[in-house]
Length: 217
Image (cartoon, rainbow, N blue to C red; front, side):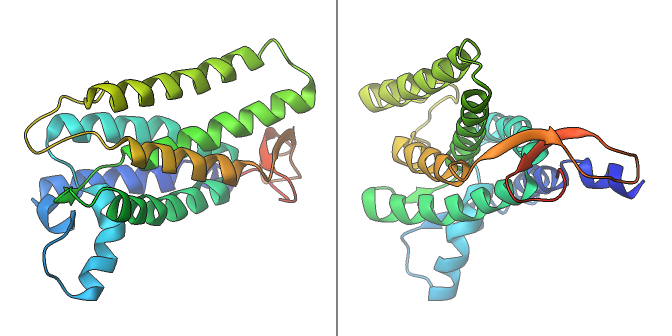
């Protein structure tokens, strides 16, 4: 039972649940990163909480759904890397937006963190396919990378988002997506491999394991 519980993507569930909870409780404005006068501790806290804050139901739906899918995949590969990606990208994205987009009165959303998870999964899978010499399957990875570049180029050129409906309050921030992707890719560069994991309660099993880790997470 314990081994089965460990395999559940509970960290992803917590992330999605917190984003939904912030919306349900009406805390979106309080959690957003803003440039209004505020104590240093509040500013520091909002560097993280802003990612769980959204501009509306449509914004929340797309961000949370993407987190649920990519987070579950990344967590199945390596929960440790997934959590590291979430933490590092949250801070890196917020600081990049604070410095690079000073005209934004407020920043909210998980799209940058979602991009970090996409980078983590894409590069991890790509490295594993290269290790196995499965070059034909690499085409899917190349297409994924091309899709991300195309989406970013579209948003930069048009000032609109590809999936989420824009509004007077909400505008896309491609900078957050690029920074997130780079963080996820960097975390993945340490390498992952598909192998048979060590003995567990339910016996030996195959799974994604980070190099140097003793069991699949």
